[in-house]
Length: 107
Image (tube, rainbow, N blue to C red; front, top):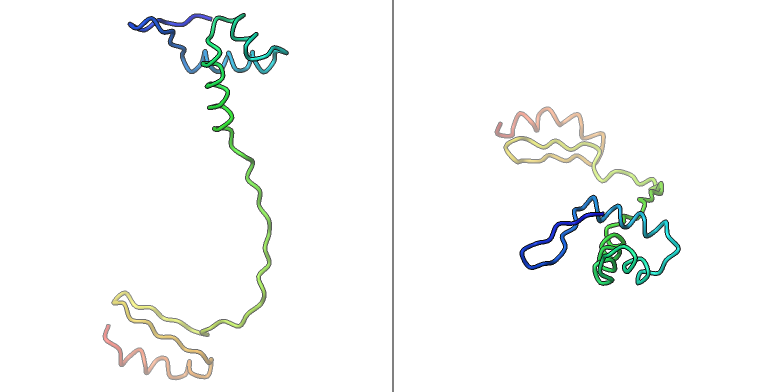
C-alpha cells in the first residue's frame, strides 16, 4: 500500500486505502499492534480507523407490526376548508344538516 506524505511528514491514506487495510486486518489473525507494525501504519491510526468503522456500522432496522385497538372515531365527519375553518360532526344523523351548515359558512 502506498500513501502520500503531507508537508508535515505525516502519511495520508485515501479512503480506499483505509478500507483495504481494514479488510486485510479483519481477515488476518493478528492483533492490532502486530498488524500495524507489519503493514507500516501507526497503531493509533489503525485503532482510530477501527473505532470509526465500528461507530458508523449501522444496526439492522427491525420492524414489528402493531395492531391498534378498535376505537370509535371521535368524529364521523370532518371538513377542513382552505380558509382555515373546520366543521366536525359526531353523529351520522347530523350529516343531513351538513349542506345547510356549509352554505352558511364563508367560503
